[in-house]
Length: 124
Image 1 (cartoon, helix red, strand yellow):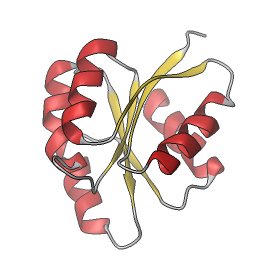
Image 2 (tube, rainbow, N blue to C red; image 1 turned 135 degrees about the horizontal axis):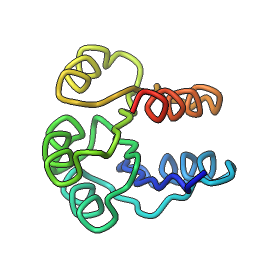
Image 3 (cartoon, rainbow, N blue to C red; image 1 turned 180 degrees about the vertical axis):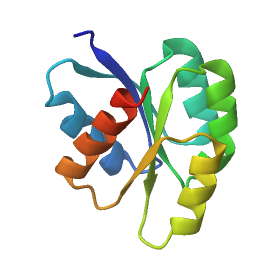
């Protein structure tokens, strides 16, 4: 199996670190880039063309919803997993309509994170 490459996007360093740790505990999963807002996410995607982006919805400067179409424009094969807080269901639905493939809710449950990754890679 090829290594799955990830870009982790969240304005909270703690959340990025937690998610990165979960992802990299798995064999053949590698976080190649990190970003703290939508603009940085787009730049990371242009550089790395990752297989998967975990994208926080609420961030300063450019939120995750605004970043989706730009990410997919630069890297159409990248799968996006939205990261949302409780109570953001309407925004998650908007994100799915724009091209996101799955979502996870904070606080993270590793089983759910791995299931979302499996969902987006199997339904490629």
